[in-house]
Image (tube, rainbow over all chains, first blue to last red; front, side, top):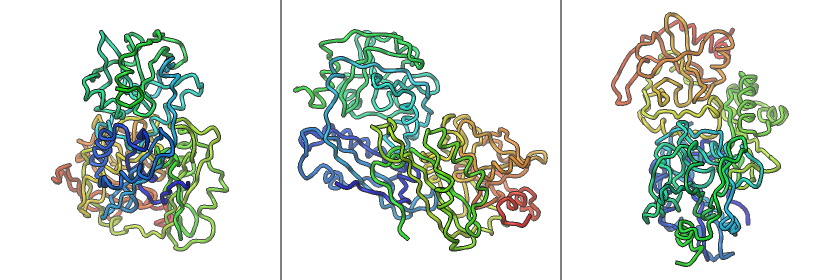
Length: 266
Length: 266
């Protein structure tokens, strides 16, 4: 299967002028699609890019599944044209997609993962916060901070030291029995699993500093493809272990989230 | 001539994971090339992308000029590969280029231009400040703030209200006879004409708030392709005229800059 290509003057390449979605497909059907569509629309509206039609979007997962689980990556760019940063007079966005067979890392569901605190601080840009746009250099740079494969994710704070997200997952913590996730109105990507959990009343938005993360009762990183990874060890920027949490055989938060993703039956 | 293309999984498209340069070619030779090369190297080093060889770069402007003046756009992406944000084990960057015949807007050199203050505030990200990376959504969004063709540029401040740059040019102002340009250690793109002017001792870095711009003695926007546009009218976000400056028949700052670009003889 040949990959779709974009020309040199596509604004997605030139400026990161577009948005993307990474969608779990189960037997060829998108999981949490209403949340993906809502974020895609919000992103396109924020950037002033026409939203692809529902038919064009549905065609990206039509045509039969090659595996029970796949990942569908969608990219919407503003297309070519315009003079420099100025927009093209007639917008002609491009919708590109790719499907890849997928298997979640189930060992991480059960055994938990080690995460580290990242050195990089996310800049504040309220206009771009929450949407899944193509300007992802902060995430790329943060992910360069470690190479050891036993570290599963890195926790990112903003310039004020507030916990925001992990490099490619959202973060959740438990305090006094309740589960919280950082507000994402200044930076960060608002994940679709996060949105579904908030909408179900399972999770509420709150603030916690990166510095205070070792003192939370429990900590998870999660997204709509990988599911929920309980954090069992937290390392500092310098690799020092700041905290260990015990494994939890009956993790209610994980169970609820995995029901939403179809990883456990309702 | 067909445009170069990149595949779906190119990280320049996926994450804006790369840098670019826009170079004036005069009779097929790059103008201010040492400054472009220095910025390209700095950008690649900051992102951890191998720097293209001097031979590969020189090949982009080899092969004869199609016009006296051309613009050469270079894009260097990290290439394909890696798992999500994690880097590919074997980096294989892509160097892409395009040459376009060019004519500067000489009327703007002589008559000056109208610029406006932009509403969007640039976020602080010291790690990315100064380099010409492919994450340019802030510039795209700022450029959407006006459509009227008589407005030539928009002035951008950071979240603290400090003047940083214009959407695709650097900004210079005169105070007590000296010419200044904003520091770019927290955000903004450090232009090559700006770098050459600083290195010649013509311009110094300083701070000025966007709010205070109407009170400067003179104001210019400039880059290494378009040259120097004196600002003769400054509008607020709402289109209200805040200040007019008279035309200046003998603009020494412009003359020095245009000597560097070869637009006037030394």
